Length: 342
Length: 276
Image 1 (cartoon, each protein chain N blue to C red):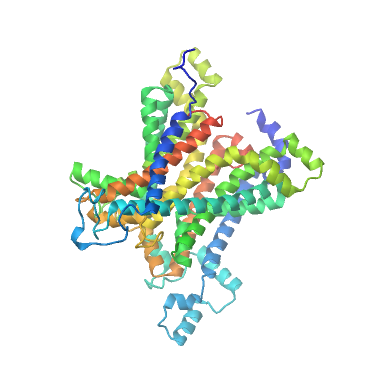
Image 2 (cartoon, rainbow over the protein chains, first blue to last red; image 1 turned 180 degrees about the horizontal axis):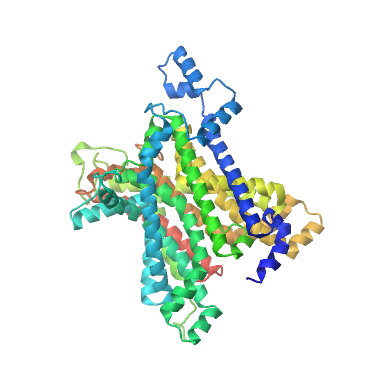
């Protein structure tokens, strides 16, 4: 398809591991190996972080008032008396089978706690991601039609300013604004998605918007640049000279060619959205993973903390992986270049 | 050519706006050192929740503390944390990035695997957990943020180094048996600056975003010391009726971050990137 597909690969061979195995299957194979390796390192980091806690872990968890017998008992219970390597093995084995141990403060399985809080965080992130795509595309299209035009300037300046406001500050300002303008705020009235889905969505809307807005500004910036670049290229001139309408050129020709950069941007935005939702749900008082995380931090509930960190990291790694694969499927050129994440 | 039609760089507007916005925060920092404002931590039950006036330029908060004085004091921590944090991230990231890019092969694989793995964690999560494990102190916050931001610098340095390796002057240096450490420090590092400079400025802005978020959650700058995030967290219950408590800290915070973004945009454009 692309002339560089064969030419480029031959010199690429010498540079990286990916080149060792030619073709699509090889590429995906290498990526999967890489995924597993990354997951392993991530889990190791997580485990290591909680193993190098200054002082005696059992002592820290139980507090200064615990007796020596209690501490000893806790060590036996949680396997802290075993060597580090064995503990890591046990922990990984548990994590793979979905058993992340028991929370110290809630006295419940960690996996149960996480899954009960997951709908809020993931729902909020998903809605925010949809908002990013739905808003940034049309805005970038409008803006790139006539670069330097008044509309372009307005959108760009607006984008810059929004980009600079931290999500939680945006949330606070939004709450004040909405309360004064419309007399309603949706904070506090949380409903589980299984009970009242419409209510669940409506109380997610504002928080999601607050996470999404800075990322919309960022995506808009990237998209606008890539669309302006595409519009200056030869095939757009050809299409124009053939008498195609502006809209058609935009949708059928420019959009598909700039879609790969979009996937790159989305994979960039993902972890920020997840991280942002951890803070924003605190502002809106939503029972998500962020609240659980803070609670775990404040009572130093390390089994719960390590479980949550691992869980969130694995979600991010897998989503990155999916974005990479999707980019490679859409555009074979992507497979030739190094991972495009800056 | 008339005198009025002097050349104006397209990046000029960005530099000017960025400098003005940053200037506000730096001015606040300087003022906080002069002791012109009342003590930022002095409480006064008689003066709580007062609106802006001549005595209290930005009003007082729920504990009767002067918001103006606290805004000034908070700029100190914002600047301190972002600058030292970026310094740590820059040093660690650039050194590992140079090593990975220059030596390539196994060394590159290992370093990139580690930096990719760090990037897999949502940054704020990593910083929060580090602080949770080691305890919330200014030092720990700075170290945690430095580690979280190091991979971005490593990436930039590595990509730039790989690009420079094919340059003739590097090859010459290699042929002349110049020590690798000297090639990296004298020949490669200065030429990475065009990429590293915008990354550094953006890093400062992003680090401030993180720090304010952490302080908002109570895991950054510890009370009673003032920080913008903490001030906003305190203001949350009062913001409906006492908006000055929330407006001024957010304005200062946005000034700093926006100023940095504009500055980086200016740098990028003057280094040959097209205007976005």
